[in-house]
Length: 452
Ligand SMILES: Cc1cc2nc3c(=O)[nH]c(=O)nc-3n(C[C@H](O)[C@H](O)[C@H](O)COP(=O)(O)OP(=O)(O)OC[C@H]3O[C@@H](n4cnc5c(N)ncnc54)[C@H](O)[C@@H]3O)c2cc1C
Image (cartoon, rainbow, N blue to C red; front, side):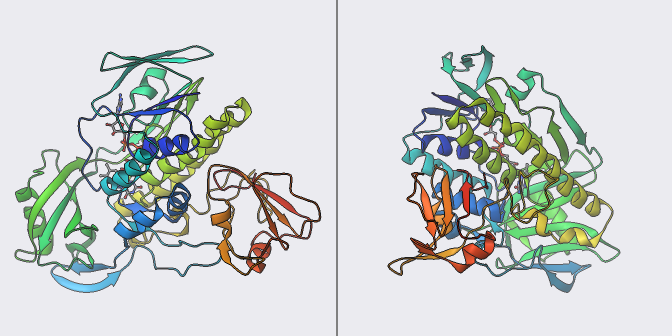
């Protein structure tokens, strides 16, 4: 079995690790000639942090990332208060990482690339997918290097303009709001405190302003400003003129602009996520407005859902990728779109990112089933102690590419290779409470941490 992944963004890299750590031969190609160096998706949601723990990259992500800073709100030159997009929450036994983390996308990608390289897989730059055909048994892909590749599966993780999606003729329904344009960039700002974020606007129009949010690992901020025309000046001088307009002259002196772009919000969802042996994932399958910080995170979750299924290879397992992830993408697009509309309407509650942006409530359960914890729900974490009194956590025990059987006060010897016996080998009132479990109950956890 072998897999070709087109696109080495967060989605393709996550999928590459998922396959490589299962020993599946995988190639990750990218048409870019160098790695992208902008902060773009800089918010990592709690569920993504849990996935990163399983992939073995969380320590590095926590080391490089920063928690969401408070935003200092300045209206017409006056500091009027401080706000957070989400109030920090204390961890619980079930939710070890309850808060989003800020890390520029280029840094997240570098961490994922390093992990992939540990499995001996290097991203192949300057290598575009330029054509493919498939039969029931195989996919034949043409690369821009002139090479022809035979693979069991092809995954298009090739971004919003996905070649794979277009070549499959999959419709990408939705909207591009031509009325909204934003100038985004990574820039240093003398005069501003890098421990804080900033919102500068006019008092009579407080929701139309510019945001500067600190980026970790230096003194840059991610800059975002609304534009009223297409011919924006994306140079340092252009950004400085906008800061002077909204914050007032002399408040911040910009320098060290390393990335800038004009961006318009897109909300689109692919009609299908799969045709035969070819799958699409991440932005190739759904594109989001930045409100709510969901795009990168949803792509990582797609890859985490697809990886073990490709490795499994059974049709009934593979078929669940589209049903589970397309339903979820539609829901997430609804959340981001609502927040976007609130911004456009000048509704202040758009500044608050609610519970549902954390992606901890992502579930593949049957919606008609209203019981508290059922098949398809995220498996909660819980602290445990083993018979010798050593502390561990459920997440540590089901970390890795395998599924795990949890048994509560079992009376028979284990038959599953990855069994956690609570009440005999391990003790945990928190696990019993979280899983509402009774003596003799057994719960199977999928490789991606959802109840089977
Ligand atoms: C300005 C901006 C701000 C954003 N803010 C956030 C945020 O705060 N939070 C968040 O979660 N998300 C955010 N996003 C979205 C996030 O950046 C994307 O959702 C994320 O990059 C998607 O990852 P991906 O791997 O699916 O696709 P991409 O990152 O787009 O990667 C696709 C890759 O495929 C390659 N490729 C394309 N065609 C081919 C081909 N034919 N052959 C081979 N390779 C190919 C490309 O070179 C690229 O490297 C933002 C996006 C933008 C633009």
